[in-house]
Image: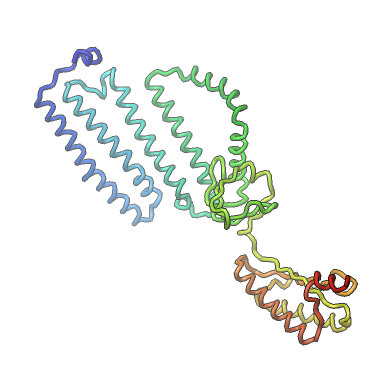
Amino acid sequence: MESLKWFLPKFTVPTWLDVVIAIALCLVGWLIQRFVIQKIIKHIVLFLKNRHRHFQANVLAQFSKAIGYAFLTAVIVLSLSYLIDVPLFTHPSTKNFALSIMVFFAFKGVYDVLHFYTKQPFQLSDEEDQNVLLPFFLRIGKVLIMIFAMFTIASFWNFNLNGFLTGIGLTGVAIAFGIRDTLGHLFGGMSVALDNPFQIGDWIATEDQKIEGTIEDINLRSTLIQTGDKGLVYVPNAYLVNRPIYNLSRREKRKCEQFLYVAIDNSEETLRSALTAIHKEIYLHDQTEKEMIHVYIDELHHDYYRVLVRFFVATNDTAVMLEVRQDILFAIRQIMDDFAMTLVSSVEDEQSRYKK
């Protein structure tokens, strides 16, 4: 009590009745928060969702915890004020502390909203091409909110922000040299977000084929990729921005390329007719691109021709592409049989036979 008098000289020593009343006030406050305020918030959220105001509903739902904690804190402070007969919200020794707690919960609500949309960015915008940018900048927003909350609360206690910022500026240069790689990944992440070469859900591959998979997440330092053989891989952003990247999900057509090895003893007339028939078969398929079909001899060797068969399928689905390719290969086999053409089973076998 003596130490409390040093901090609050005019406080009144509470009686047991005051203690019971203060505890009762806290209990009533908890019941109101648990069964009244939370219920009201849930009904308002449901009402907003029924009115298709999903943004307002999500913001209120994420603020509900901060509102509940702030209300309980206010009840506790009021109970203590009654207990010692000192208005803690306005007393010079305690008002900054109470105000700091209220401000903290306000910023906590904003932080919870940003955290919610970081995990589910598609609910913030209907435009799919923003799914890459939103999580990235929302994470930056979370950091800025924490910094702004810290400075706001520090200002209540007359903290020397100018000296603090000056110290940050002097040490920042030294720290920057020590975290050059991290900064490189950070700016790499900014480049990925601004250039938007891919978005969450895209299937990408690097030019050297060392990384290939589906984008699961993009954060400040790295990109999370789900690969077919290695599972989840965290790839530094600086690695991605310094290499050519193929966005396989944005392809509108797939290339099919096949080589046929035809024995050189086939006549020119028969060979030309067969290649024309193959070209026609590819052209008539309903899922092939008609603008670019290549069926030509592209190499001449001692005892065989190499025939290039190249066409494109109007799909990005691998299964569809393989099915079309299978149809064309069966058709090529039938055409070769119809023209009684001699095929070389494999270049290696033919070359081995020729050497013997």
